[in-house]
Length: 121
Figure 1 (tube, rainbow, N blue to C red):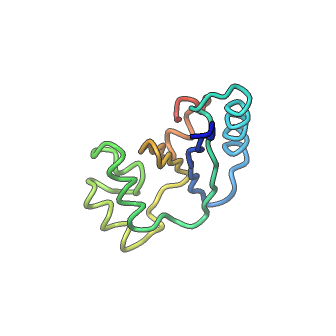
Figure 2 (cartoon, one colour):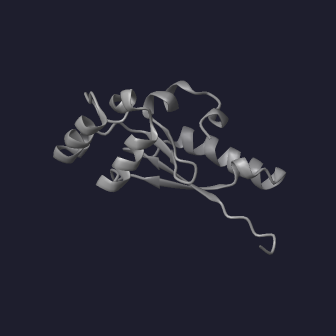
Figure 3 (cartoon, rainbow, N blue to C red):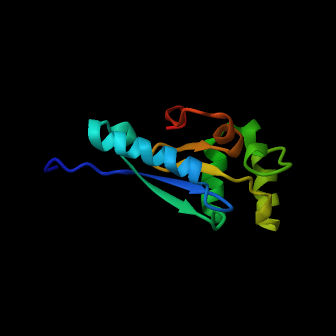
């Protein structure tokens, strides 16, 4: 309405600020502003705190069930991952990029292997 577009919110869960990933995401954000490409219009939120239990449940339900170990160290299933996370939040593997609007989760292994962040978005 009125030509306004909302920006997607991307959250980067990290232990410490990761300037390389943040710089790449910022480049895509600027590209989106210049080209009016909605795919790259987002607001980046860097979060040092671990996800809440509800957020973790969303993350685990957004990835394939057999990939819960990518988010929670040593997890063998979604329920196992939730149990491990509830007893010790440090089992969460960071960094993790989350596109809340599109239900996409890019765990640490994908972030570290991907050179072109367009693949993640």
